[in-house]
Image (cartoon, rainbow over all chains, first blue to last red; front, side):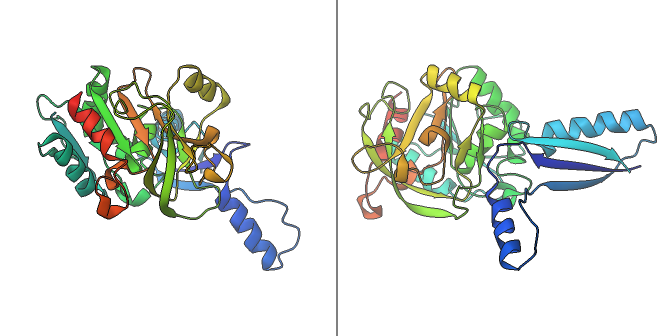
Length: 79
Length: 228
């Protein structure tokens, strides 16, 4: 089973990398970009064919390691 | 004093801290590999040195914070044993849950490597008793992710419990404003655990122990630890 965990910064947490990318896009003349927030994507293969078990394992992975819950949120998707 | 310096893949300031500890205590610390599960018997102080453990992959200190040896470090801290995390070591302490909050990318996005003054917020702990309360000390900083972030409730708790160890200041001891190099909340450069036996700080006191390196303001921390 294939899954994707997306980790993003919580609202209000300063994201200097996102700001730098935003500035670069503006200087490249890409129109209509009002803001950029950078996050991380983890594509994960799970052994289990049981959807609920896979989701439980992925939630655990996100909370134990992939995301720092102080400043980040995460989303788990089974693809 | 029996000190143990933990070595992670990518640590690179362990030599500096070994030198500072040996010079203050007259005893060379043990080097402990991250995959080990036990600290040497009778360890008084554990030091997590600076560097780029695991190449800063995922987040600074995230993978090292979950290394085998960290269970032993947590148990040592729970027994009241002293733990000092410098720079990447501070990031590891935050990621491992031994200290609250997290170190984020510097506000101005640049890696900063310079001399920096800190105000000693309290001089009654095992780490700082050789300093004076409110003293401005000159040490070095060298980090890209030193911007201390915690939620409002955590900041209130840390402040209320007097757990801020050092704040960024100028040479006169004036805290904040342009003296804050990285955007840290409340100008925080270092914090203590609830029982004041764990200290994490971004600056490098271990690099200021010899007049040749520009000052000796870091020496008092290692002398205080050696005498504790």
